[in-house]
Length: 195
Image (tube, rainbow, N blue to C red; front, side, top):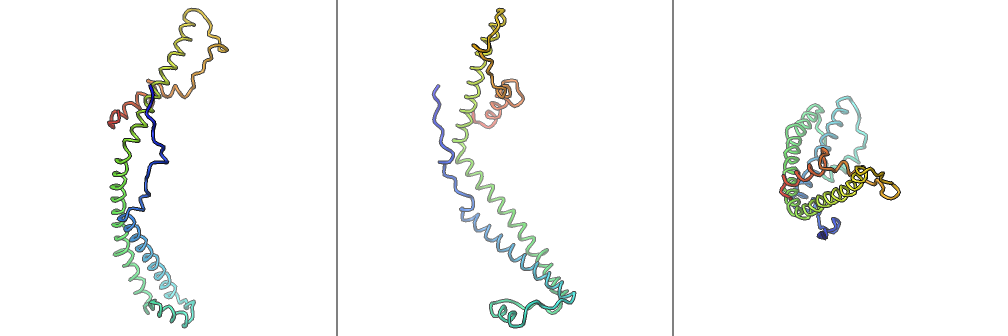
């Protein structure tokens, strides 16, 4: 039986999920939230250091340049600054990051489902051919082992130099009665509507 030629998996066009505009937008939003959280954590650490009496590591001119570029002066009260940072983390940014992560996973699931459906027939064809190949392999080896068994039943000694006992041990794992053999594989394909 001539088998249908299967496509080369490398020839199938599968775009990276990050190229989906909605997915990319959500990822960009996540990066921005995580960046803001890191900035808030750094502010918190500086406030803790100020509370312990640490002096600013930078001079007034450097800090003035930061202000001109849009920076901010830390609050005078380090405890208030720590509290503000904690509110940002636990009441605003943390919940927003968790919600966004959930939305990203939902979209990832939807996009994955669509892509799996698009490729299902290629995948199913490969599995059907695999099942046929396993069944063909088992049938041919059954003929070979049957010939050896009939010789022995007739009192002959099958000479391995002429009739080698060449059944690959891995084939036993594929046999009909093996726990995850061809019967199991066939059932899985039937359960999923592939055969």
